[in-house]
Image 1 (tube, rainbow, N blue to C red):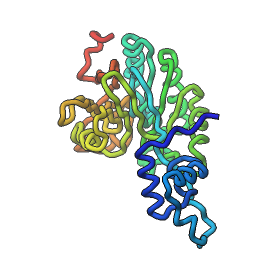
Image 2: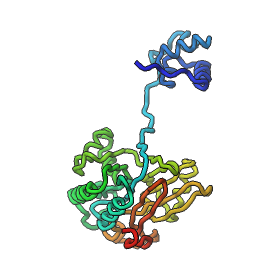
Image 3: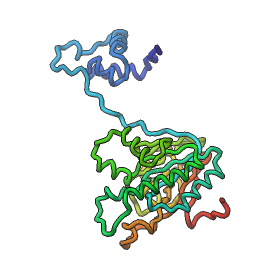
Image 4: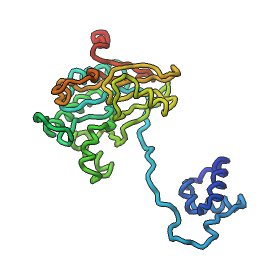
Length: 310
């Protein structure tokens, strides 16, 4: 049996504060992730005692109930090819193929991140359906085709979820637990090897610092504006944002962290909500992102000379 690590000085200070605030040994053991006996013995050594345990109990509850802490998002390492906003079945398949070709040519171990919105899930949309939209079977067939295509290149595939993916979860209204939902997606796309996270973000540790890849469902017409706002909260991290459908690379105000709006893999001409109305929003940009050696390489229509790279 492995021994618990020694009490650190900051833990001792926190223990004293919790005791003085009136917490019981049981409550403190939950908060510090130590055993009840360990907490009680440490208090004896420090010559402090719990007021809560000395007084008669007014309740049968020894400690507050445990609630989850949402910090179990994926932490990855190394080089990755990142696609986003695939929106099956409205995917631009030439760009999807180019993503595989670039990764095969420039990454020693090609690995893929799908940064949200794999499928449209139009059947769960709350928007008015003015024209017949692709059926769920078409979306699933397109997603299976995409993973079959990418499996020929990428040794590892990671999927995080975006706002379109959450349409299904919202429709299920909590019927499935997260693990069950993940298994359902793996079954539907016919790819058990793909790792799926119910978080909309992940981190990549690289030689040039940590990258946060996120599908943040907040839109701005101004490229990189959401990345700059997020950068104020996630200090000292490079940021790569999906959902914006822009294609932009820049630096934060400090000049030390990279900011990227990841272009979409969707063919916007196939999206009804785009094609049926005029809009003042910027034209959706099409492309993908490669993180190599910790540095961003943005590939997008109108910006990339494909003959040079491929």
